[in-house]
Length: 415
Image (cartoon, rainbow, N blue to C red; front, side, top):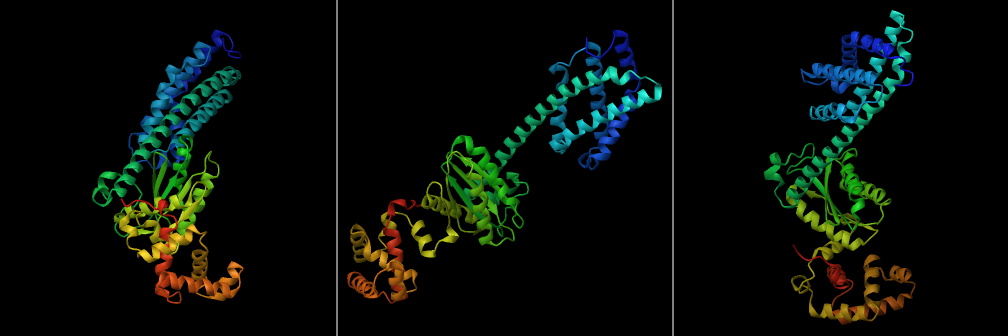
């Protein structure tokens, strides 16, 4: 027997009172749910009110069984709750609103019980029903929570499938022609759209879900149009639609958002961001750029192509095969390789000289050496390469050659 439920005759009396007020409770709970919860009020489903009434009635039936049996309802008797959560979600009602609807219905029913006590002089009614009601609500909420979790998992799985299809189609160059079939939702696919591709490399399986969620939130910032992401092996690939947002600001937002997300991961991955690219046709190149940038960054660091000089971008993207290196003349190759084997004194001096806008005095200050030392080294570079270090064209060529030759094994293969 339920503590506080009274004698069997008391329970029978309580049940009869609840049954007598059933229609009133159903109407009141249904009207309150529709009135107080906007997703229900704005629903275009003409049968929704009838369905809500049926569910409230089913709850009252289950509560009466609880009251009659003198114990909490068994799980099997509440499966209709899980089914309802799933159905409401499929009708476009957010899971959060479904949860709120159950709270409203239970509150309304209890208010009607108290009103009955006041009107009919049933002083003991609330006492008789209080504990059974609490037991029923606890069991019902467990069923609601179970249904909610199942819906959330299904929605997450559905979202993952959709976004994975979009990402793969864009990487394969199929997105423009297959847009209607992709079901991309709010993510824009169009020739005039501007995109950033992001690659995150080297994280554990346990961190994949949180990292994917963080990547999907990148598109929520003001001015951005959305983002899609998928995890493939140890890589996360995200595509962000920039909208009207400045590419520089968008890149900073992406780096800041991901840096915050990876800060709590068990293993800090490498992050690479490609150049802004126009239309889906440019996404494959943006992906290769992001991969190269992540490789340059290394674990625990980030690199965005926009932060690099053009010559650095070119050296990153050129393949490390002979098809790229043969563009550098043998004299330049010999000079760079031999100097790098000898600690790179001349190469370092030349790169500092280029960074100091071809100003020998500033170069000497940057390297903490005498100006004559810098001038001597520059003359040696002229002699060994046949170039003129005062010529902007020659300087650009030599910087490109150095960047390509100084660490060619890190350069990506052409794909």
